[in-house]
Length: 290
Image (cartoon, rainbow, N blue to C red; front, side, top):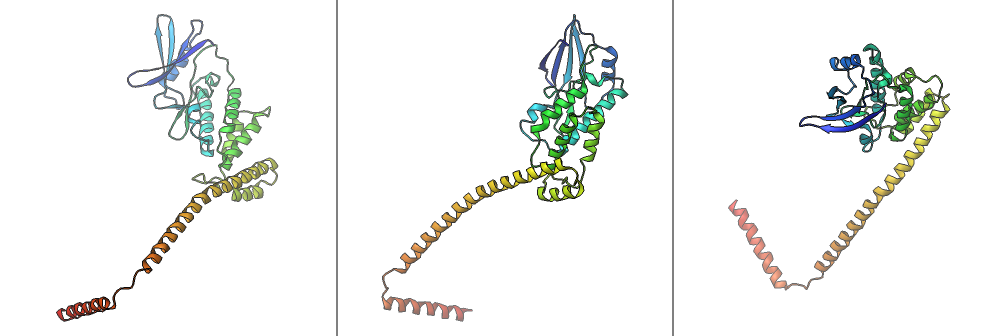
């Protein structure tokens, strides 16, 4: 498939533009299906033809490229569930709309993310000579995600580990991914993704005693988590020590001031008595006025 990919924008929208060479035939019924049906997870498509030049405009307004999103964040179990559930859904929708799922450009540089809920949007190429393999592309995406997962989210690590293992099996398919995603919802997942790793390890040992690989991974995570906590603890001690030193200096300064104030020359006894008498008079005056 000979195509050129560029980006354009007008006063309102931004577009990913694919220019198809003259020898590429565009399937009209697929274009019509995409234009007439607002299919979730496919980028909106509009074809513009000038003379013999054919350009496919995909609307990417308010969306971000997957690779750019993952430069700023790590994948959680919720992100993985949303992404692969969405991918499974769009592959099934292809059958419903008589589209070919092998024409989805499932590549990290061609996937766009809707910021609300980490939902992917894909490019569908309605070309007659598009020879891609959706399963191979899915495997590549799974491998791409491998080091993008948050190590603090135990369930996310378990999901990507199981997906990587499944990719190596000869019977790997979309149903395999669906089973892994569906089975990922367990007591291990906390609503706020603050995983208590030691507790999850006990639950996993009790419920999955036969799964030695899973237990090994969780043990590694426990070790990493403890090391991370030690590092954080050592960092947190430094400001405390500095505060202690600062307080000690304040205390020493205060003591010095007290000592200096105590070492004052003795005042004249008559002056003291005079002040005392004046104070008593004022006090008596106050009582009688009341």
